[in-house]
Length: 508
Image (cartoon, rainbow, N blue to C red; front, side, top):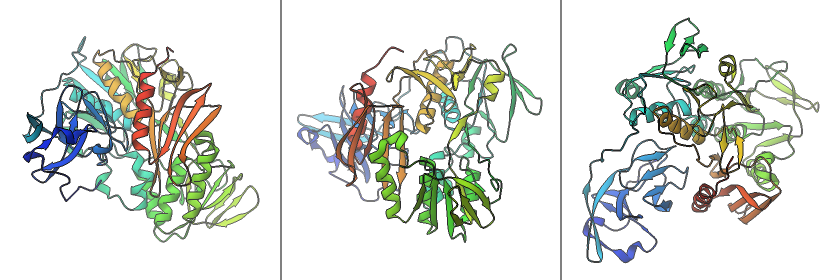
């Protein structure tokens, strides 16, 4: 996320030969700023060279038509306008004017952002209410204003803070390498300036679908014309002696991460319960703070259910190389002020505990409102629930996925953001089918794992490259068809795999 300080490549203002764009992209600079020259489908473009999400190098990305996709976390930008068209990026990249003279391309000054074509509402709602202050809720609110929705926009969040970059809570922020000001998705003034009535620390008690009202816990009723449920998920909790002690922490909110950081000051040994992505990312973050870390989980191989045995074993080996001590095939019987007792009888001296044993979708509101449930809130291809005018997005939504051919629900940050964006446009009448290929990333020390697609089961895993040398791509297949791909340092291949899945769809 650090800015580049030294301009790279040729001075594009002085011109470069068209032949230098042999592979479709050329990294250069204009006036001290990194600029990427890109051969799109319609013409040659000059744009900012770095993704506005985590500063990923777009020169290593994938050009699709007149768009470019970031290699790190698959954000997508429109080359004609610079607009961030797909999360996790929200801010646009800058654009420069391009002039071709003969066989030479010259990049001139920056262009003003063109006026984007917004969704024309079929019947403009007067008020939209969003329940939830996480990824989907934020992305929906931001997109509604980007689409020039001019009505009342209310966002209700149980969180104690404005929407934050939740993936970082278990990664750099917890490790101490990301400052506090990296965490908000937007500064506080954004909501005021955008006319978003964000109400934090606000709990919803009920939804009156017949009256089209949201009833807050304090009894206040808010009318809505369209409603988005983005209530997310909550961590599964331990039900053992000592589970409620003050040094035992969940990890879901900014307050949770702050509490762990505070407890980590002076801590010598930490216990992570669960070998989930969150659990192992927390383990890596605590090792960065030079704390001895023990991981206890019932699995024999970490994350085998998601990534398979070979990748799971690699991740275990990676953590052990960094000093993590595993107690697999075991569980926790009890926790006290100074330690924990495992089900095997082993006792550990512990002064900090992080619980990462999965999450469950928050479905209570939807259930009491009479929405159809299917191990989540059932939605159609437009993310609308069984009650007209009510939409659902994020961790609670189960949607018809055209790539796997099944109704699926996933708990991925980028999926939640993209669903929020689609739901926003559909609440304005766009009739945009949600067909994004699921994507998530996980970080373990300096090793990123990217995953595209969705494979709840497979009968074959094909490994390209070498997992052990951290250069690989794994295909998860069922009946010969690739359902998902996991990769390490194969960013371009990961983007290409996502594109291939987009182009192959199944009627659900």
